[in-house]
Length: 344
Image (cartoon, rainbow, N blue to C red; front, side, top):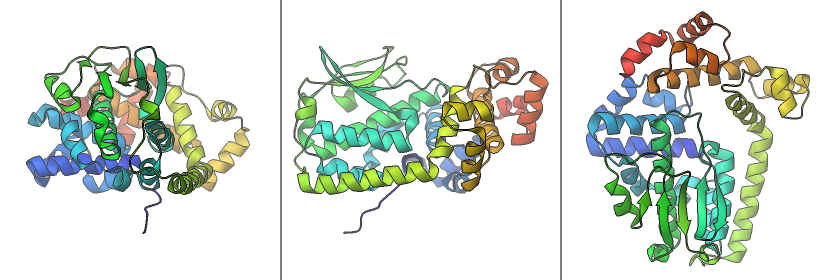
């Protein structure tokens, strides 16, 4: 049997959202929404510009606003398949002996391919919580859609791996955003109490949930799949990890003064010279990555928040607003004001 060794979480999610809107409204409608966001289907799929995970969330958000596709995440989740979506990681999850083993594999996948929706497992008096780490660099309502897409997909994976999981094992779902107009769909989807405006976004399970068996578990197969996924993880981190690490450090600099190459290198326990060389080996430079991250965030802040140019300029480390204005126009081909008009 041929197993896909790797398929990034970003492109899977983007394809699922596109497929769902195509099915519900037609490809022309999907393309019109992408055009309204200043995106093209082919360029996003090729990895140009914004990340596909972000594009998926933006597209889902606009679909809800413009087409009243309320609860689109639940429709998208119907296309989910652990093995088809996650490749070797999906098979490692499928062969895990317990739900805890399955979630551990999922954490490895998210750490490598979807760090913006990383989660942790927390043991509490009221049960075991699958708790999603906050990502405040992502503006609302895109962040909310991103979370909805992830928790709906995880629930579908669980149902596929352990069909009886729905019978009392999930106790509650807590969400850290206000109740949307389609809040009633959440309880219909999860079949448990759902609470909004909570400190964390989390799925709470019964105390022994991590030890519950998976019917497709196979110790021998899981060992093989886990070793393969670990080798893949180490290879990808070795080959591409430095680029992702720099992007993550740049994101951490939002609002705290934009870090230069030497500061990034210090955070990564490297010399500036070594960091420059390693980025160059992968066809990147600090300046290129810095501009990409800065301008991607700038566009999201301009189009999806009420922040002024001065506030955005400060968040992104510009000393003067005119410098931010010029950089934005040079990068995107339009002014911040024109971007706001297009998105409104």
